[in-house]
Image (cartoon, rainbow over all chains, first blue to last red; front, side):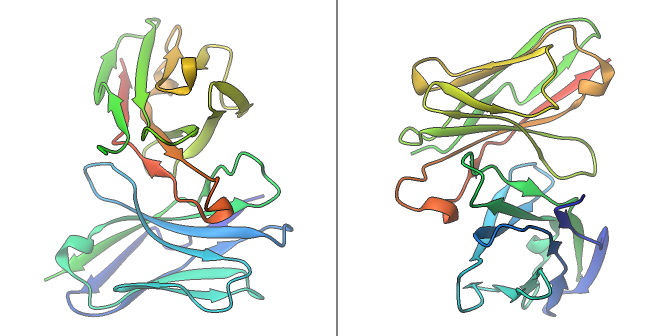
Length: 116
Length: 117
């Protein structure tokens, strides 16, 4: 079964507007972490934001915030005030606490295009 | 600290040839991961090292693939008898969980793009 689901293959947003990228996950482990990475066309994976399953508040990092709804098993990324440089692939990933390797399980990604 | 580096950045090879990729992690990171990313997909886990020990291998890692991390520093990923289905981006990542545990960030290298013709 898919552990991370990103249902939006592609999204458009107007420059300076906010956009939400969806991510749902599936795990029976009560301890887990959720990550968002950005991958520009150059290929490198850039860490954006982290949310732990026991964190009481939604994570924020500058223009990035995570809308964490634990009961619905969703961890949507919100980018405020979009910039042209935000055009990239965005991946949601999960790490389970019971997994001693702490490997990341990625979704299939969402391609975001910011229109001027 | 120069981050995670990978070499080469691009490799074109003919089917049936062997290829080897190198990853140099961030120096103080004891954990090293290899992932494979095919076009339009997210990275998929291949294998994981803690120091020099290879502790986990994915089912994706067929017997044509071998990875090493001698002395717990750099790592190599070798693919023998390459097939067209091996064409992908091979990503290396490193992390240190001793202080951050489950929230420890994995730092990715720029990847090696392999094309098998």
